[in-house]
Amino acid sequence: MYRKQIALSFAGLFICAAPALISLTPKIGAYVQAERLKAETQLKAENLRATEEFERSRIKQRALTSDELYRSGVAPSATRLRMRRYIDNPNHDPKPDTTGWSTDEVVTVYDSTGKCIGRIENNQWFWKYRVNNACNN
Image (cartoon, rainbow, N blue to C red; front, top):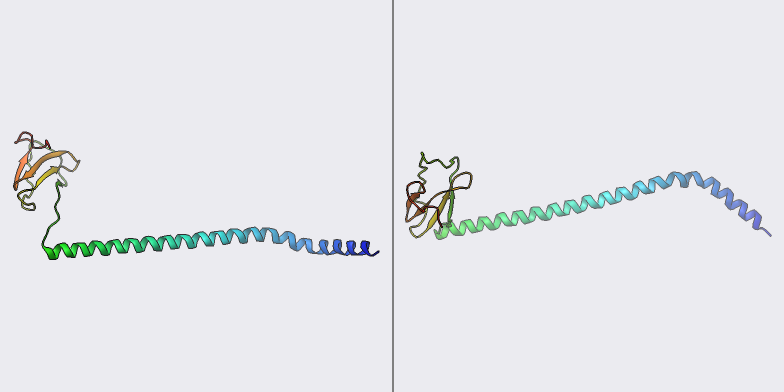
């Protein structure tokens, strides 16, 4: 009985509300995009904080290790030495300092390009141009 009037009133209500709904649709998309961007920013900030905390703990552990080595008097050992600002040249002997290693260590010496130039053994410098097999390990 009143179906036509009710349908006509809903149609009028829809026509009145249509401009508001049409302008609201892009705003919803922008709101969703802004929320997604906000969530990504928070995630990046949390990842950055976690990375910074990890780096800080690593630095603290290195400092503790360094302090313990200093207190014990034990120097870390290395079996390689890279001569900086020196390129292999048979006319110029680099003569590295041999006092930093113990007498039982054998240290291979490289130039700045990574090419073997000799070895330090028993606190003596063996240059490959004076001693045969100085670079043969």
